[in-house]
Image 1 (cartoon, rainbow, N blue to C red):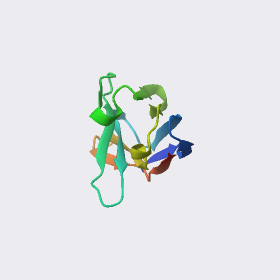
Image 2: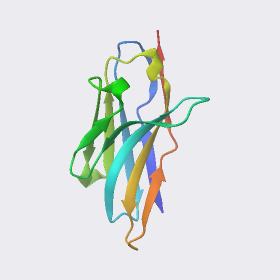
Image 3: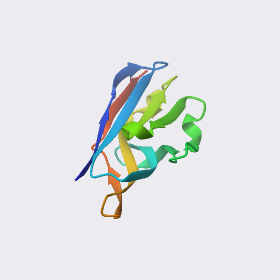
Image 4: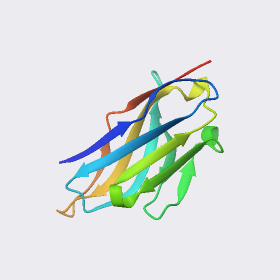
Length: 120
């Protein structure tokens, strides 16, 4: 009943920029924290950036100063602006959201992921 749909991934040269979007839809009463995670083959999924409903943010050390997470609560959407991209930023980026439905049930949702590839 709840879906997270990411968009904005692609292939970019090192030093370039991409902007990811993730829109949540369905039976949503409220969304708490939202975040972006990166999955690389052979490694655990890792947190890239997170943002609370009130706008407090946190970042992985590897992306501080280059990536910016933001959200539009009216649109149930979270964004990730990625600048000065490096080859090591390559991976599948998944959106995550802590959602309370109209049934008052609180669940953790994941998007299907969007591929980001940074060439050197």
